[in-house]
Length: 203
Image (cartoon, rainbow, N blue to C red):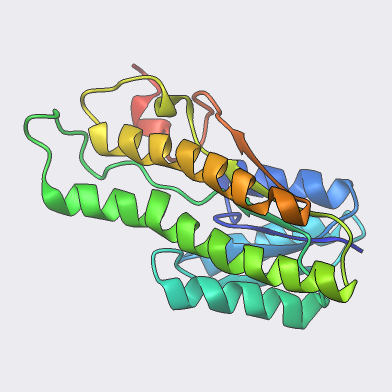
């Protein structure tokens, strides 16, 4: 059965993606950073769709955590067919472009761009190995970015820049992996009601 990793899938958009992929017949690795209880709940909901599920704590900002997530998935399920780069954060403080601080910029970039970049790199190499070995036939990578990739918000510039970077990352990996038959696609959601977007609900 095809296997998918969805980063940040204990809640929000990631959880919804995990459930939908389970309904489409994928075994699922639920990834979380802090909330193990939420991850277990998501895994149980996934398993209720008749597929296998597992949880893995990994912080995508830590490159070795990302590698361990990929390796554990392959060890558990024997394959990796799909990576969904979903994990992301908004700035902890929505600061005007002229007031934003380096700590906020670095934190957002580490989670939203640097982490997915190197996670995709590692996953892609594993997918190439699996395809060459005949373990899998189809491999796909999906990047969840945002309408903020092309819509300016001057009170969260670091977020917009990180999502624009994800758009280019998607194009680059799509070009590079085409020769291996690995597709790389981007989805740019608008504002979806999750706990992350809660603070801007009234706006």
